[in-house]
Amino acid sequence: MSRATRLLWLPVLATGLAVAACGPADIPVRTGGASAEDPQPQRVLFVRGGPGSVGFLEGGADENASDVANLSSVGGTHGFGALAGLLTANGYGVTQWVEGEGGSSPVELTAERLEPFDVVVFASNNADYGDSEAEAVGAFVRDGGGVLFLSDANWGSSYSDAPTSDQALLTQFDLRISQDNGVNEGHAQADYREPDHPLLEGVSGFDGFGVSSFQVLDDVEGVDPFILVASSSEVFPNAPTQPGEGRGSAREPTDGDAALVKVEVDEGRVVGFMDRDTFFNAGGGATNLFRLDNQQLALNIFDWLAQRTEAS
Image (cartoon, rainbow, N blue to C red; front, side, top):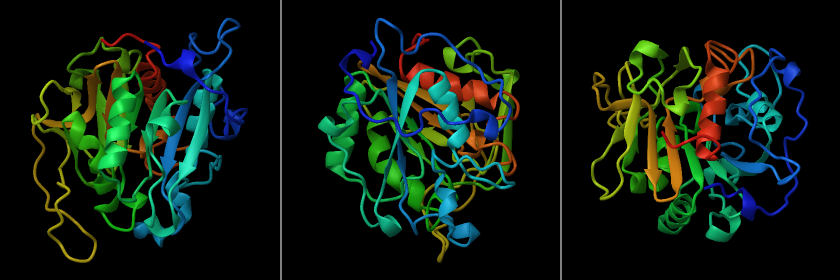
């Protein structure tokens, strides 16, 4: 069921973004958002890393935090403004919470604070989260919420910061996330284990650069993640073995390494996706939202998490 009937009205950070400034103007628009009968948009929350906590491979530039208000299409942009524009064009409200400077403090995650949202994106977060925050996120999902987990080396001050931040919240969903591997990875329909799943509808291919794959732990009773697309590039487990930058040691991928994985827990849903670059503004490095079917994939992910589309 949708959580939209229980929404509170809050100011929408990214409403009205000029999508054409970020890339091609013909973006997919799907019915099923706010309507005259239910005018409140479904709400998406992005959790972002704080100033001075990101971009360790690029001189510590805060632009690496992938701000949803960053509309830049300058070459190498890391902005998520185009993604926010895609969401608002499809009837979502977008809000962003920012962690403390230098990764010093997490955002406050409680059941009450998460209540107004339908989907939460753990994006450039890199602060430390504990049991109370994990409990709040778990309750949010069980009550019908959706959560998307992404990671990237430059969403932290070392290779391990971003995946460690996610892992504190992710273990309860029977998943582990690896470190950014720094290489290109693309997928086509031949790679899809369930090609007709709503998450892959209309997606002939997608790609990323610097992939953080997911692994199923098989440790949590009653939680059964399903790998929709297996990862095809080397894996760096988030177990630092190299001094200085928190780097793990590489291994070859297996059928148990996921580029795209979905989990259904009670009334809610969780998605783990391999990369942030897939959702950058036009001009974003090796790939971006406007390459291949990355834009359609993004919309599918949010629509599935918000329960606009069927579970399977």
